Structures are given as C-alpha cells and as structure tokens.
Image 1 (cartoon, rainbow, N blue to C red):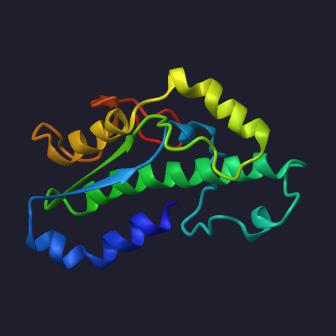
Image 2 (image 1 turned 120 degrees about the horizontal axis):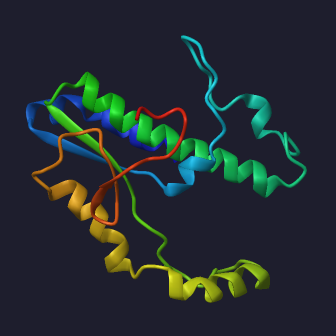
Length: 164
C-alpha cells in the first residue's frame, strides 16, 4: 500500500522534474488515524518484522492487518508532505482519502462480510464519486503541494505523527 507509491515516484523522478510543474497524487485513507505511533529515531525500519508474525501483537489477525493497513496509509500522507518539501515546487505531491466506494459485493468473501457490505451500500460512494477527489487532486490549480484531501477539498489529516 505504501511502497508502490514510493518506488514508482522515485523511478519517475527524472521525468517528473523535467515536466515541472508536475504533480504526484498519493491515495491514502481516513484509516490512517488508526495507525500506531511511529517510533522516533534517525532510521526507522517499518514494519517491524515481528508485526508480520501471526498472532502479534493481537489475538485476532484482522486487528494486526488493520493496523498495518492504517500504517501504510499514514506513510502515504507523510510521503506526500515530504516529497513536496524536498522537491521544492518542481513537483507538487498531495494525498487523499477517496471515500468508501462499493466496487463489489464481497466476491469470494464469507457470508458475514457480504452481508456487511450490502448493509453499508447506503453510506458508500459510487465509483464516479470515489474518483472525484483523485481527479480534483490531479487537476486543481489551487493546490500548493503537501495537502491532504477528502471530498474534493483540503481536509485535516488526524494523527499525532502529522504536522499541524
């Protein structure tokens, strides 16, 4: 969820700088607020290899998986902020929460997840609505870089590791 954005952007650095002013749109999620706090130090190895072991630190694997997903989404926001700062205007990077879109009815998931997804339909976005913030992020001339967006507007990302 994070390394793909990071690696692809670095692979395209020369082309992005040559196309300045260019823009990088990084898809994150409001789920970032459930990420554990990041360890402090000059070099951070994330995720900690023990976090990937079954049963660590939670009894239920889906809790561990949700925390790792949230951490990857927090890293996406931090990456967009830092990329805009380091590339100093040559490339503007923004991150966004696209909203919850109902793309399927659960596929091969169990009946409980399928029932939950059907129940959630009234609170989800259409595919077009879900794409609108990404399109806004790519095309809006008003963005300076480093912003976090939700519902086609600048929003406040909410995590203690993010700059105010």
